[in-house]
Length: 77
Image 1: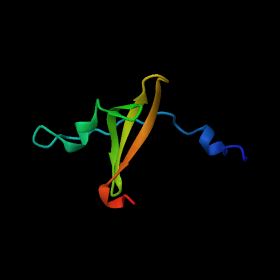
Image 2 (image 1 turned 135 degrees about the vertical axis):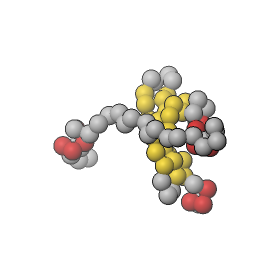
Image 3 (image 1 turned 90 degrees about the horizontal axis):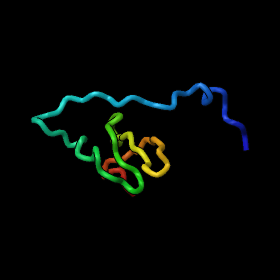
Image 4 (image 1 turned 180 degrees about the horizontal axis):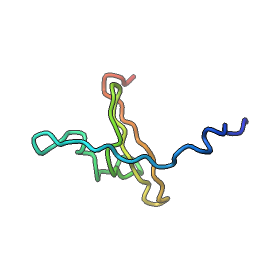
């Protein structure tokens, strides 16, 4: 197994959420905030793109932050 490249050593460990304006008082992307997906609780929206959306989530037992990417349904196998 190769050691991690030096680029990873200096990589940021936390990404700040993207600020989004809500449309008509309710944004579809924010509906998952506060919900649980598997063992993770969604905390905020990090970003979105052509393939899906990425959320900041936390594992409550391990107290660890992760990024959770949800693909658009058109990309499911």
